[in-house]
Amino acid sequence: MASPSSCAALLSSGSTPKTIEEMAKDAVTFIRGLGLGHVDIHGFSMGGMIAQVIAQDEPQLVRRLILTGTGPAGGEGIKNVTLLSHLDTVRALFTLQDPKQFLFFTRTAGGRRAGKQFLARLKERTHDRDKAISLTSYFAQLKAIHRWGLAQPQDLSVIHQPVLVANGDNDRMVPTKNSFELAGRLPNADLVIYPDAGHGGIFQFHEQFVAEALGFLEQ
Image: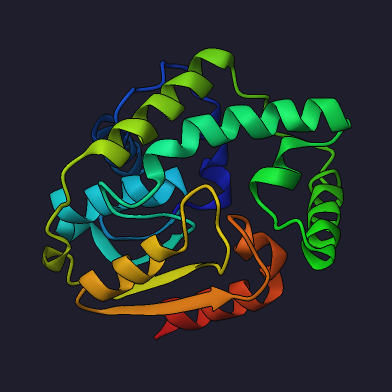
């Protein structure tokens, strides 16, 4: 995994690919550019799609995988991410809220509270904050996810590395059924589902997830 000193490399320039496969190639180039030959990968949402491709195309590069809030190619409901993102962005504008509150969390009392706590934690970092994503990159990412949702299912049995799959029990963006499907199709996978949680289940249960992830990586 990359050291903290390499994080500055994330500020590099370039254009955002429009397919998950192209993104995976860029990620592999970045990993090798850091001089790393064997890594653990945690992929959240679109990142989990990219991680699956890396594990299939470059198996010798990957030791362990953590796939969260994500699903397999052609997974149920993934093609609807663009529509949901647009609808919830408009919904947030009309209610003067952050779109993440709708996209990542349930609308229960517990989900709303967790969303507010998450958004507050995001503001704690005051230095070297990520720049806002450009509209060009945003739409490129949505196009890549849409294509992934329409793609033919892949043979996940070729991924033999240990995999930890995690999600909330009510993910609207990448429906939770996809997490169960991943865990069932991967030969060596563990599944964790968080209650009353959505796409941002690992943010809502961040303390529990970090402990589970570290334990998984240390095995």
